[in-house]
Amino acid sequence: MTGSKKLDVAGLLQAKLKELDADQAASADSRAPVALDQQSVGRLSRIDAMQVQAMAEAQERRRRGERHRIELALERLSEGDYGYCAECGDEIGLKRLDFDPAIQTCIKCAGRAN
Ligand SMILES: [Zn+2]
Image (cartoon, rainbow, N blue to C red; front, side):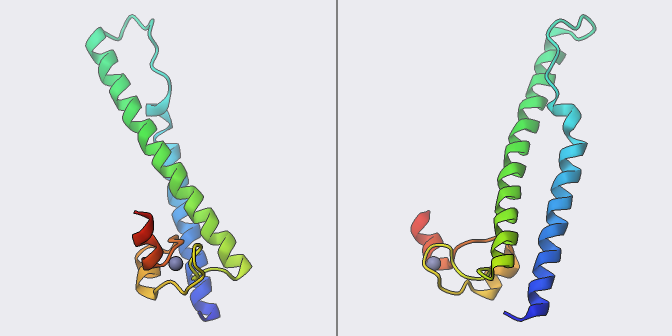
């Protein structure tokens, strides 16, 4: 993998991290605990609010997983391991990396894991 390609990937991954940060900040309100003693909120709207909160929490968990994958990819990039499968050490296909720059495994190992 060439140096400029590596820079591209680093920039792409950093941009994804920023996107995750922005999403996280934007959804902070919906993840706040639902007040149970709020008299202005009726029973039904409280249930609505709790469902919204549950969905926001699920999204937040996905974001955390995604962030972890991106941070790992950046680490591998700086260590020179980027582009090689974390399982078997083979080169990961460029199309695969283009599709998901944070991917850690080659197509063979991904097939085995799932
Ligand atoms: Zn592999």
